[in-house]
Amino acid sequence: MNRTGRVLLVLALVAVVGMAFRVSWNALRDVARAIGADTTAAWLYPFVVDGLMALALVAALVLTGDARTFALRVLASYTLASLVLNYVHGLVPDLHSQSIGWSRLAEGDWTNWALVLLATSLPVGSIYFGSDLVAKVLHHRPSVDPTGPESAQTDANRLMAEQGEPVVVKPAPAEEVDSSPVAVVEAIGTRPQLAVAAEATRPRRATGRVPVAARSTRTVRTDVELLAEARALTESWPVEKLTGEGIRKALRTSPAKARIVREALKAERERDTAAATAG
Image 1 (tube, one colour):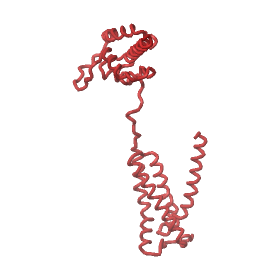
Image 2 (spheres, helix red, strand yellow):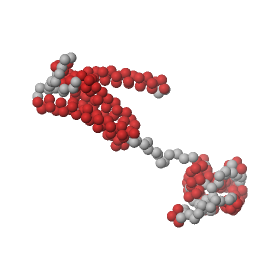
Image 3 (spheres, rainbow, N blue to C red):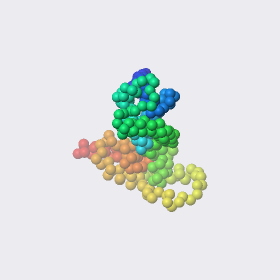
Image 4 (cartoon, rainbow, N blue to C red):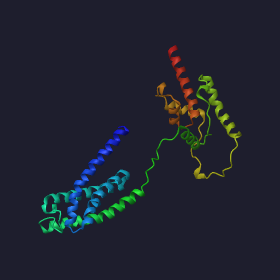
């Protein structure tokens, strides 16, 4: 729904609620007069009952979990109480008089006592429940999803740090990697030495000794081991699925090594296909 439609929907809702409140206001005012409220108190009484219903509705839209359930229960309770008092107002013609003073809400004593107790307890309940709902809304903090999406580079750096592998800030572009089998094998053989050399020449800041509990328990896999593990994992994969991201997630390795393994696997697939065709 576009913005104009939403605005019109909200305005229509406000209009309907306003008219419904006006109808209910007449009944609740007369009930308040019947239980002994003066003119000012009777005029404010509908705001106490129906106003708390609006407050509970807003709180239910903001809160979550048990707090939202509590707000919905308050809303349901005060809606039911307002319905009962409106129903009583329709059954007792004496309540419709403009000059009504203290009067009975029902013919039976027990019924009258129960209705008077309900009508007189609603303002006190509004103070308690209204204060509690406002406090819950003010102290509410939206929950943060711990599994939210992370950037690809952040995720790759975190995995490489856990595996004890050197973090490559700017990996070589994919187009610079030679896809021939000989070049891939040579790259696998020379990659660890290049990474170690780059790591050794880069100045490092002294951070102190890493505690034993904080050290990674995962062993560093060589490129040959990564390639062997990739063969076993991707044996049933089609060629289209052999992507750098898929291999990186399967092996839990760095993007740079995943690309090298990908090229090696594709070269092996092409060699096997050529041999099968020739045979």
